[in-house]
Structures are given as C-alpha cells and as structure tokens.
Image (cartoon, rainbow, N blue to C red):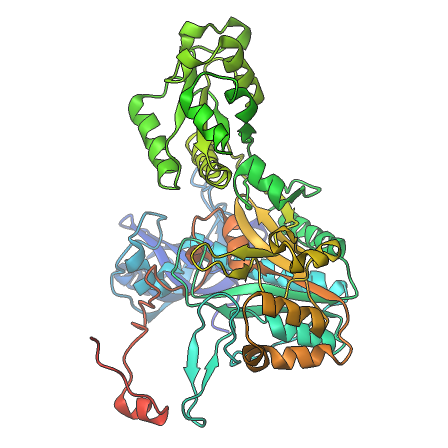
Length: 598
C-alpha cells in the first residue's frame, strides 16, 4: 500500500507515531515560513505542516502544491499548538509534520470547487461526475447507499432468504412501461428487452421451490425522467411462498424500521406503520402516497354546504359532486397574490377553482368569530353557524384559512391532495429527520381507460384479486379489490407488491378481461401459465426502490444525488455523451437500417 493509514482515522492516540498518507490536497495555506495543507481521502481530512527546519525539500515541494493534487506524505503525528485546534474536524487535535512528500499526480484547476458544498449547475456536475463524487456530501451519500444495501442483505439472509440473480436480457412483454430493446445479432429481426423488473422470473423461482428469494436488481424503463425516476434504477426485489399479506407487510416493517435505526439513528421511524385502505387514503389525503409527517387532513363539507344558499355549492351537490377542504393554519392574512397562486395549483389539476375563507386576522377561539370577520365570496351565503361547523370539521381556529374545492369527487380529492402537499411545504409542517411510513392496501384491481373503455391493471396483470371479490369479475369489475399493497415514506412510494395469481385458470381470466387475445396470451405469457400447471405454490412479493429510500435517508431532493453515475433530466450520460451514433457496420451486424427522419 502507498499509505499506512487513512487521513480520517488519525487522532490523539497516534501522537508521536510516523505515518504515511496519500490523498488529495483539499486546501493549501502559505504562512511564509510554514505551509499547511489539508489532505483528504475517503475517510476524512487531516492537516499537514511543512516546516523548512524539518525538511527544506518538503517545504519546496509544498510550494508547488495546489488543490486536487494527488500526493503522498510521510511524517510524525503531533498535537497542534494550543489554541489552533479545529473542533470541526475529527482530526482537529493533531497534525502531521511532513518529513517526506511526493507529488503522485498534479491536477488542472477543477471546473468547480470540490472542497466547498456550493451550488453548481447540474449539467456541469454530471459532465465531471468523477470530480463531483469527490465532494464530502457525495462521498457520504455513496457510503450511506453502501450501508443500506449491506444492511438489506444481512437482514434478509438472517430471515432465510437467498439472493439469486436473474437475466438482464429477457423477452419483451406488455407489463406497463416502455421497454428498452436490444437487437439480436444471431437472430435477425428479433430483440431482447431489458427487464422493467424481474416480475415473471421471481414467480418462476417460486414455482421452482425457492420459497424465499431476494435480489438487488437492476431495472430499466424507457420513461421520462423526474426527481425520483431514472431510466435505469435499482430495487430490492423479493418473493415468498406460502404466505399471507400480513407476512410481507410485517417483514418490510421490520426491515425498514431497523434500517432507519441503523443508517439514520437521529431520524426515528414512526411505528407501527399505519395501514390505510386506498379509498381511505384518497378521501383523507387526496393521494395514495400521503406524507404523514403533518396533518391537514381533507374534510368532507358536502352535507353542510348542501344546506347553504351558495349557488356554486348547491349546483355541485345536485350533480352528485363533493365539497371538501383543508385548513391552512395561520394563513388568514394571505394576500390576493398568494391565494391566486394556490388557485393556479388546483386549476392545473382540473378543478374549477378554489374557494377561500379567512377566519379573522388574529388567533383565538372560534367562539369569538363573527360573520363580519370572515373574508370569502361565499360568506354572505352562509350562516355563522355553517361557517363555524365547516371550520370545526377541518380543525381550524381563528386566524386560519379554509381552502375549499367543489366538483367531481375524483378531481376534488386529487386537487386537495396536491394543495395539501403545497401548504405542507410552504408552511414547513413536515418534521425534519422523521420517517413516516405507511402501508396502502385494498387497491382496485383494475382501472378503466376513459378514452377506450378498456380495462387495465392498477398494478400489473399478475396481482391476485381478493377472494371474496372474484365473482365480481364477471359482473362489476370496477368493484374488485386486489391483494396489492404499497409502502409509502414521507410522500414517496417506496415499495409496491402483491399476492400473485398462481393458477392458470384465474390468470387466463384476468388476461381476457384485460383484452388480450388467446394468441397474445400464449406468445407473451405462455411460459408462465405452463409453469402454473406444474404445482405453483401460493406466493407474493414486493419491490422497494433503493434509490428513493437512500434519497430520503440522505435528505436529498432527487435520486440523482444518490446514484454514482446517473442520467441527466433528458436521459443522457454527459460523461460519455450517450446515447450516441453507431457505425453502419454495427447496424449491419444487427440486421438494422436507420430510417431517415421525416
């Protein structure tokens, strides 16, 4: 090894010992007779002092050093002079008196500061990702990710799971997202697909008698990128045989509770994890991935509004619509501009508009509220009693603002859910360093495409319907609930899974309901149906997004911050300039020819 110790491991107990270190120059300070550098490696930073009285040659070499030079230094560990200690550094009590130094590699001036956590344009960071990853925050994120994956492996092994790798080159089958296709050289005109997930493969492993499988799986989906989505991502893939839904939920609650306690002990997870039905989540939070770090639950005001003289409310109720709202605490003094901003939020989601109701301008009990204190276009059509009843239902007090939407139930819920998230963000209501997990259960098995009227899977076509709802498949498919569950943390869907269909008869019935012909079923899923006829056990599983979970643990806003080499927002690799053209010879080998753009 070119070094005897890491920079970050040194402390007072090493005083008087000679060490050899290697790393990057983080900072250089020239005090004339003395030159100091902060030497950095993956484990931390330590100060090195170059004194000409100790080594004139070392001092001369130190004059040449600049930030990001790679150097090797040997010297004695000593205590810093009293008053010069640096409490911000783990090594702040000591320094190295250099006796020998070697420049292993000089460095050009980096395109951005590496030793400061400053804002840098993301495109520049991704182009020079190998420099960006040297920064302390990014090093910490990589280490956190490593610890999370290591914890998962250890936890599941102790529970009797075995890790099995599944193929990357597989068959393209219709499972939801758009596939990445790989042309075959040996089979002209035929293609592999990169896996969107190992879904069918892990079910086949259950047929194979594995019983408890997991994998840290690479998955690929040709979708538009966003803060929590990349075209290639990593998930914990898991499947079990002979289990019920609670077995998987209990396993995941234990896994993620212990993970947070280990990887982020300063940020506890609320436990036990609440379990909400899909219908309840939509009614109370307007989303199937609610952030439970704060309240602001949606309240139904329809019955109160129906008794009012407000024509907007009455018209919506007469058409079978809903009037619902949330309370924005302390926001009664919001300006017209601020309220217009909130109005735009809900209009973009299909709502007709936002009805606001300011309850006075000072805090206090609703007992002190009078009608002339209420500022709202609806106020003159409501009695004071009706206003107070609405306020009480939404948990409001004097000084709060009621935010109300009237319209179709599905639009009202979604718009208020988005508004709830917006107000939680604006008012900083989410408790920092808190991990609020919840399970969402009893999803609808199917959803109907409004344009075509065709049924599609709410999750994927392999999700089992609830036993008591199977007869409804022939009469009212929209009422069938699936054995599907999601795990949510702080407003992000972290994991999703289901108990699977494991008989070919029921699976064929679902495929037919989804509009697949017999030929399509045989071509795309024949292998799975055949496997079910050879004694498939009851089984179920779940997949958890490792990128998203590490993002939340790290307190980052995008998964790009916890992936070593992510794609940009336009799904490009800025280091390699990929995707890139290939030669005509390569295309010919793959039996492909590019069509000129029209």
